[in-house]
Length: 120
Image 1 (cartoon, one colour):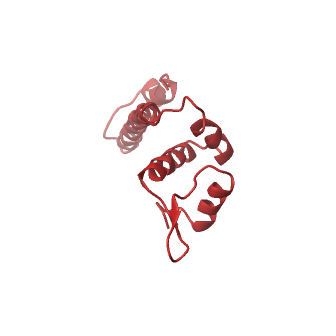
Image 2 (image 1 turned 30 degrees about the horizontal axis):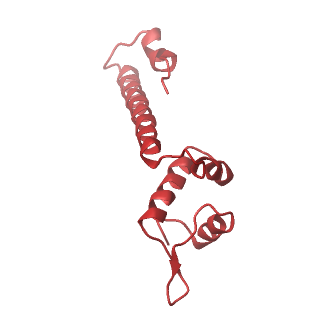
């Protein structure tokens, strides 16, 4: 299996023209080089964002699609997600301490995370 993708998924991406193997081995298995792996990486990043394979195909097959620009965008998005998760973890930890009587929290502090602006 390539990058945790099952053969059925790889066959489907090949069938819809999203990810073609670069060659076939003697055993009939599809072989993928760096170019294909970079494309698969993009597919997996966009799947992580919840996009359908059809939507991903529309993005990555655009003539102006640039892998480096896409990676920079993915990194920025993931850094924002990481910061939000860190704030949420801190809020959960503080609330646990509050419920144990080890930390005082106002009603506002209990809800600050949820009222904070989301910057994506």
